[in-house]
Length: 484
Image (tube, rainbow, N blue to C red; front, side, top):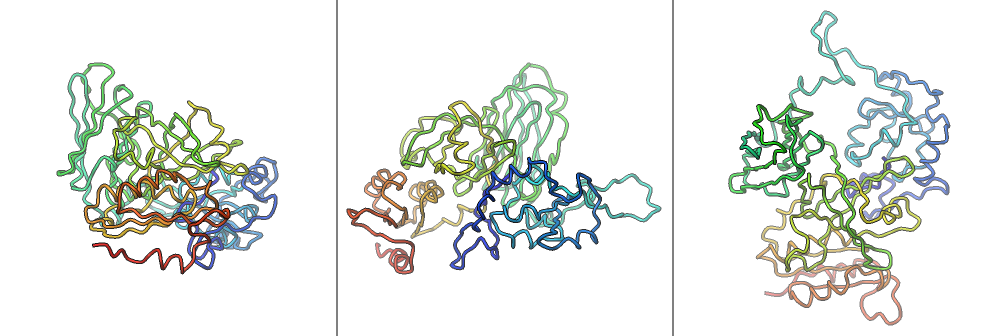
């Protein structure tokens, strides 16, 4: 899976960060684009240097391959020769070389754990790490090792002890319904905290509790209908998931446990779970930006919390490519009107189409009724930090405005202590300003909201601020509100 970096990428010391602390991609040579890499992997060229052989790699052997033209990296027990990929990596050589000749799993997980590296680097696979013996030679009990690690059932995770108390669950039934009840032992659980999917005969429910996930993951013993309901009793932290039976028969058991069932694990270890969402509509917002509306499957419950994002996944020329997007409301005024589309089954995205890009043209070519895979929510933003907020300053440029949409709506409708929200919105031209009229109407309607547009390439008729971000602009913008 070819990735486009998330907000946490690149790493602090990467070439991809400019000296001012901002972000910019490392310039790639001509012929070194993502599509060029896909073509190279499909050319039949030997990218490992082993002529198709797969070998078992010891730690000692791995350490030897730590140079730019001979760079091996281990990810989750598999070793890849990434030297051919050096010139194609948008994060620069330094990012890859920081894990040269070593296990780069932790570094990989920090910056883009969602990437399907098996797809992206499959032609660079050298082999598997040799397994170290973990027991004395006379230990005969059959406990097989995978990549030198005990199976999860044989390992006590020290992090689990430091996390929240583990939830529990129960279930009961009527002739027509099965209700799964999760007791989280938390008081800040809401519908945003629960992600549930029914696929084939399996049911997966993930409850996010701080930085952990509690998983219910079972192969159901009987068939159920597609749709189900989720209810949260917030003051006691109880979750009720009501499934509809296909046949009015009595179930002897709920089903059989699947991976990580009834477990509380760090959220970063859960991996990303995707479901296919249908494209319902797309409409022009500016000359190069569109509003996409996707519909969740009836067998999914998912509400993306304010400040978090999801990943889109498309297969392009046989390779899975993923890119993060932040959901928005269908308009800045959706909080002040009756919803047109009910039941939180619809997700909206403001997306800029890059004609020469790899991902967004494919996205734009999707027809109404086509599908795109959408992941679980990701991100570290905590809405709780807004409590008792008085002044909120927002900076955005172009489609970087998208995370501000829900933040703005939340702040103006849910923070009683709020005195002022100020948005400085940078764009190149007037035609690039997303939802300009909506922003201006909102500023007129709510006197707490101040709005400033700044253009870097305005016409001569533009009378407002112009230029790029600068200390002078910021110092004026960040001046604390004097309103009482």
